[in-house]
Length: 156
Image 1 (cartoon, one colour):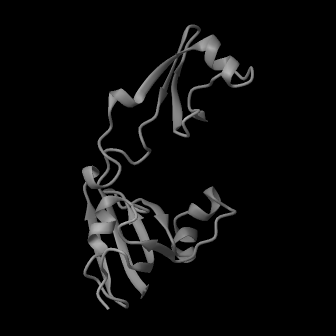
Image 2 (cartoon, one colour):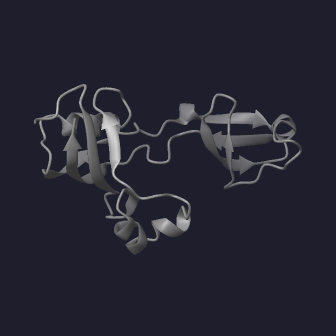
Image 3 (tube, rainbow, N blue to C red):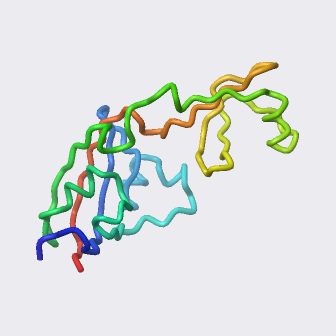
């Protein structure tokens, strides 16, 4: 059965950056080889099931799955515009240091720390001064070309 929009697809995957760094995988052995299991010790590495067309994965992966069949393997190279987009200065926001500290329950914002905004976005504090704190809300993989090795396990 050829994968089409609306199908439920179960797959194994390994995602790499241009420098061959593995940033995500569904395979436990690959996670162990690349130290991902130490970064996320509670994560279960199991095949991923997605509904094609439901925007559960990045656009480039969804497009790459269409036309594949169970048992097939492929490598998808996905440019930033079909993944997490380009980095943008518009996604870097400034906050009044005192107001942000109050929002953090009195905790002092430190560079390199991560926070979650009220809208659910995650950001990294990239500057923490006496008056202003700058938070980068760009997705971690923004601006990156991503390569995924994919094996289709099942199609429903």
